[in-house]
Length: 586
Ligand SMILES: Cc1cc2nc3c(=O)[nH]c(=O)nc-3n(C[C@H](O)[C@H](O)[C@H](O)COP(=O)(O)OP(=O)(O)OC[C@H]3O[C@@H](n4cnc5c(N)ncnc54)[C@H](O)[C@@H]3O)c2cc1C
Figure (cartoon, rainbow, N blue to C red):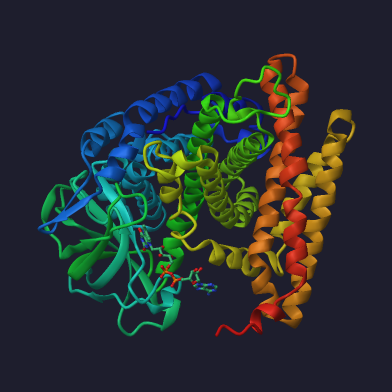
């Protein structure tokens, strides 16, 4: 079994030193969220994740969910752990106190999301979609629905799902066939079949609240005719108590490569009673409230699993003895951590993970500003940056999760491939993250076509990074970092100019370049994070020499060994799409 120790020290380093967004610091209600409070929350979070949740990862993998006689049963121990989880209030962490939440900012709840992903992604998924459903209902439902459903979801007694996918429609939601017919009492009768629904059915909560995309007959075709409905597993009485069973049934659950402790369900809706959320035919934009925040959380899943892979690889490399390193003096066998190639692997993992955690912290501040600042222009500006970074965090973090869990298997050698150590499970569990919530390729297309071409958001991001370089230009220790980061910003500008040109001549050239562009923006965003970490580390080096020296060394590693990948991606994109589109597959 793997081990996991929550990286509370690194999280507190970020909270205490990089809460540097002026607009975030102006938000009145977060001013009392001080370091002592956050440290206390993170210590408690570490305890439940290490002691209660982490052991469930292996249990869920070896005893997957079971579907029997129309009922879905979670793996052994999940129910007891979930009860403890909700009794301790973890589902309510970032929710509005008006509905029973604790009102914590994303700067805090994102750390919790990471820990939970590291501990057990399968267990996490039972509550994760509930928070997505909470956000969607909070922003789009009428008050009556909010009053009935939100307190129970916040408390964790009812869970949520997101029902988009059908057998003929995954990426292309315009193909949805599920229909919703208006009834005399104002509700809708929802009929159709949804597949691949995470936590679509299980035995952990009293009720399950499905958010379902469906079409109202006679509406516009394609994505313009999609509406959003709330469909409970059990109908809910006026006083909020559980009523009769609604027309939603589970037909089967999937047998999968990973996240075996999480039920992935085929759901049949047969004239199920549903309530419209938001306006008719505007369902997709309401669902996007759920999906956009969810996409960032999926990115955090990749980061969390990578952290567990790194910690176990490091510990194994410190103990496993094989061969002799070049500087071996005593002729005894060395621990593999002495070999340059293993050290390179560990530094790849560490520099990417810690850079990502810092970028996620920066993004969390932007999300908090976009949701809470009193000034509309500032809110909009932050919202734009969140929108730019959402596909990057979703795709780049999960792709790196695949790279890092793969590299962890390699560090363990044969013991990584066999099941005992639990390392191959990390790879399998992570492998869904580049696929669900919109595949990574489709995220890259969204980034380039909707957020970069003919758009100023990227320029806004670039100017933030340039400003950071400028205000530190007198700091001699940062000179080399500044030079390399500035060169990479030029590369990013050149790449976006190239995309604009390609877009005028051959759109396939742009499509073929989207993945490369997303990677370039990902690597440069991490370089921006490491720049800021280094700035603090040089300043504070005498406070804790080993901690800050290690940060600076890892930053140098990232700049020397990882960041050059950005140029490689740019060069690959330059050659366009002819060879791709003219290839013959026969
Ligand atoms: C374990 C699991 C849990 C899931 N949970 C949920 C859930 O809770 N709710 C839910 O609604 N769905 C869920 N899904 C479904 C998931 O979101 C879809 O599988 C995903 O969106 C991809 O859709 P698809 O499988 O139909 O693939 P397709 O859309 O058929 O895509 C196949 C390939 O084609 C590529 N592709 C598609 N369109 C384009 C394009 N325009 N340009 C370029 N490339 C393209 C894709 O990137 C992909 O590589 C889950 C799936 C799994 C496996």
